[in-house]
Amino acid sequence: MPPSKDSSSIQAPTKKKRKVFKRRVKIKTRKRAQIAEKKKEKENVTPLVRKYWLQRYDLFSRYDEGIKMDEEGWFSVTPEEIAARQARWCAGAGVVIDAFAGVGGNAIQFAQMCHHVVAIDIDPKKVALASDNAKIYGVEDYIDFIVGDFFQLAPFLKGDVVFLSPPWGGPSYKAKESFTLDLLKPKDGHSLFQVAQAITPNIIMYLPRNVDLLQATALSWLSSPPLDVEVYLISVCILF
Ligand code: SAH
Image (cartoon, rainbow, N blue to C red):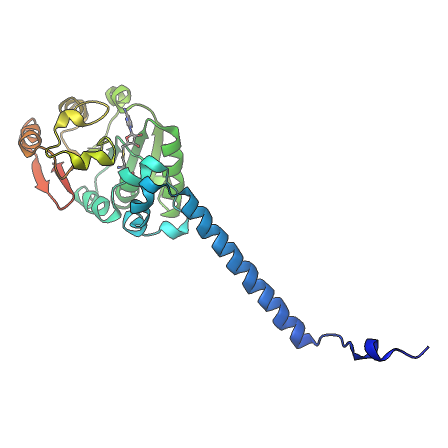
């Protein structure tokens, strides 16, 4: 039977057309995956965290390479530029103990500047996140991660510098006109400082900008010679 008029008009797509079609499908699939990824990322961002998410590249310049955070991590991580400055203070130091390591903002910078870092956090989830984040910066081999309570571990720790960035009690710390050292968690600043002093006189303590400066200065006098107190735009540091 001769082919009908209709079927003869259907032509097989040329090689070139097939190539263009394949490329279009590929682009569409990639775009769809990107949109899904962005949506997922945004869904994880709670209203409390949104403000911090907008500053994500200030917190971790390599955020897009897979940095992971939990809610507390978002508002407690030390911004990268500040963490790098704090790390420069102890450039070349042997072992730095990061007593409250969180998601690793400080530990990563110390690992880039010093020989070794002992990063402690009481929350196992934080330690897992910090360890993943350290891999992104390629410094995981320079950090020992420990899940534990700094106060219990302190008598067994040896180090050349102790870095203290205890919880400031969540974002509400900003509302206080004067942030007194008893507001630090889980113990007041005075007790914390003394625990660190038993390890080394080389202490850096990271405090909020609205900290009671008289109290912070009094704390620095516990050391001989007294430690420096430096005031910055968003924070105060007591440092050796
Ligand atoms: N500097 C960190 C943020 C620290 S936030 C960073 O840049 O990522 C304070 C951290 O202290 C929190 O992650 C909290 O889990 C931890 N923490 C609270 N009590 C602790 C304790 N007793 N011992 C060790 N870590 C503690």
